[in-house]
Image (tube, rainbow, N blue to C red; front, side, top):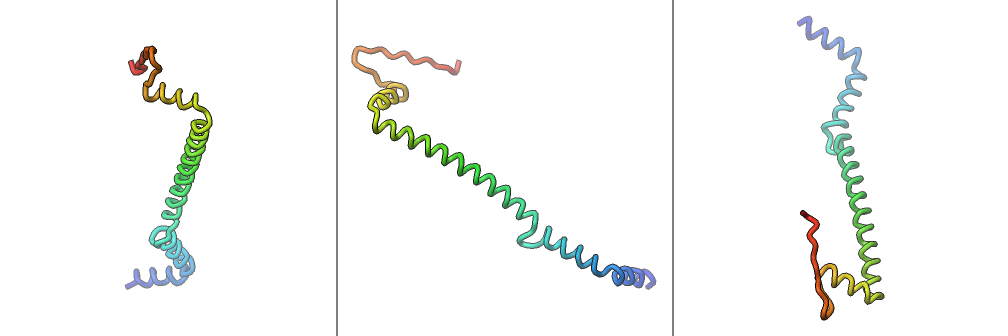
Length: 100
């Protein structure tokens, strides 16, 4: 019985600190909007913003290439030769493999 009174006396003297500690544990770890989840969400937002920037740069590059293709017929010929291995009549094509 003496141990219970000792614990009760300790809780009575430090009740404000105990309430603050319990509140901090609930907000920090147990709540639906806990600090751990907020940190995880912040990391995900940063990752998604980086991905958006990557896609934006890729879009700008593709738009630039598309504009070049619509205005420059030599660019169409260059892509047809490099990507699809097309050739002019009486012309030979040699393909080099860089893998080996």
